[in-house]
Length: 376
Image (cartoon, rainbow, N blue to C red):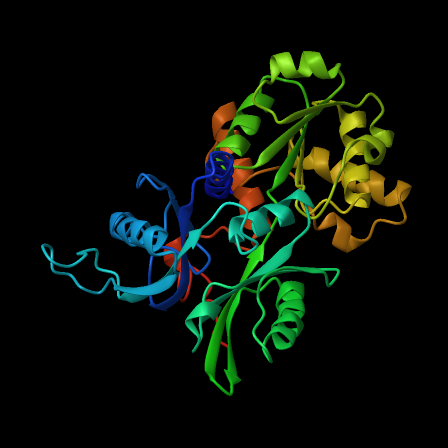
């Protein structure tokens, strides 16, 4: 998320200055590689880069291709073989994969600007799917884009006859499953390949509290590129003075009014750390009712168990599935003591929950580290 924000910010700057740029996107991987399809890197006209598409071995070479694409005004797909272990002429990184990278020039104001489409999706704080043509018999079809929203509306310039309707139908299915994939279509002119990349709004971490242990949590969220919303019992200007790193400061005197003052959606995990039992219990109940995807409760296990027991008696609308989203004691078991260590444990647990991961050691994970992007 932090990388995406930096890329979008640089794209806005270049558009304001009416400068073209190039965008490099990993579109397919054969074997293993450092980044997955959908990873992006922006190349400015002076050769500066923002973002990464590998562990550092491809960036400079891809940047040169990006400058050439800006000059030529045409997109291209380049394949990079990472299995070459020659320390002088090869990449020498020991990966056993081939990375296919779409390198496309972007002109300010172009309807095919993929970053403008991503930004339009993020402004809605709603998930979307960006479909990008990464292979086609007609060169002019390469790098056409279509942004598909959950309500069925679309934006972009993908106009291939006989393909767009199929892309829209498949995009609806892929978006519902939140599953990035590579789709292949047969046309009279030849095969067409399209990358389906899921665009999610940034994580918006809701932090409830005002103690000294809140600041490391807010800082950790910002380091990860998340938005941080600080909710407390003091006026916003006082909260901002105490927690300047937060993106927003919300005054909430009565926790029963949470849903009137605090926006909660599927990308809004929450951490409750007021050190006040009654307030925390009410906030946890309201957050579970609002369907927050993750609710972390600071404090010992018996405290959370008591909260759960009382909420079950007081709020019949809450189900066992709702209480599965409550995590208390909050955080992963990594041996924490200081506020900074606790913040790390909290952020790691939120990351794991939002991505459906078990938070086990990577060496214990069977199969690849990253989920494969299937070719359908």
